[in-house]
Image (tube, rainbow, N blue to C red; front, side):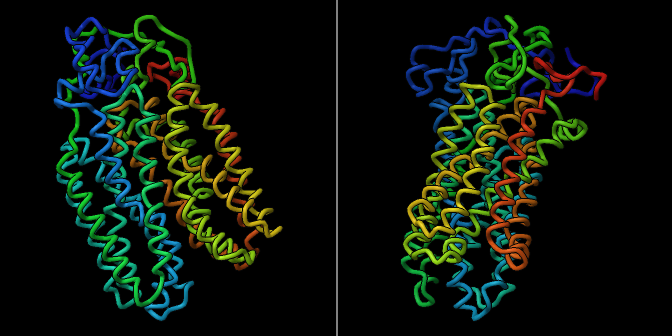
Length: 488
């Protein structure tokens, strides 16, 4: 039942009803050919043949959209995951002190995060093509430009412009999965964010093997060309589903007691629409409406805490290892395997949250992420390189899926129609994580040392895990176990 001002259809904001009747579309069951052409064995398991409908629209499997998005994510990943390996050669080349580069990563996080809201709003209304073309020029051109930078201000400018391109690619890629896979948001956002993390695994050894003043310019230029080519190709391949691809019109009013089940982690079941994906069963919130709910602000605080813990390791793992006098090989392996662990975890735990209670998986994952960070300190203090690497992998395995958990839960709670813009707003919380992992960490290390700083990062992750249990769907969302409407 719609409330005044809400957008209850998917993805059209003026559609009526909150449930989809599988009998309302003569093609709901799909054809055998459609089923065979899509490698999604569960595409029609909940009464809607999402896979078959996607084939009708695209002419091929919807998984190709995810593949294109993942390729773009992998291409731009060096901005985040290779920085700790290129900052020393850049400092040597520019003849500046390494601390002067400390704010570059913070600027990257700020611009990568803040660019996503306008890009997401554009994409929700006009599609992904033009905006991802712009992203290719910014991200590719930014890295190529680093090879020719001769001063500190040029480095800041180029990395920040490239960060805008990364932000555009990120919001487009994540929400491509959300829009085409309302039934499997965890797995498919996991594929894209896995590529963002693991895509740089091949680049890190290449960069560190050529981390000299003489060679680094060629390295940066080659990586930049790769970013440019892959993202340009992706900009021509991506497209959004049409507004009526799930044909919600005329389906009748759905129950407001829909099932949160395994995905939302709340509520019971409803025979009419309980089996439907939460993102299309409940109400579609505009960004303004979402901001008026306390659930969003709790999610925002949790995101800041987890992003701080996550980026603390990503941005400082090499210096952290060197601080304890560990061998150079330990630092190199940590930096190389870190994105692999982050990427694999997003795929594995993305599938897990599609099959089990989202909230419990999130809580357990965040608490373990915190404990592994504390253990990382102990491993460094004992000088055990093997254990140090193992704890780096464990810390990243359980924290990195935050970029899968949050878009999935946000779409469950607030709908998929405005997912790009809504998640882009939540993603600005990463700015807080970037500031913590850069400027704040630099201050804490200088005044307190590495050990208290990493212990604090672990504490933030544990706090975010415990906060998960406070969450429940907003009132009026049409999802089970939502708070009473009068509570808002």
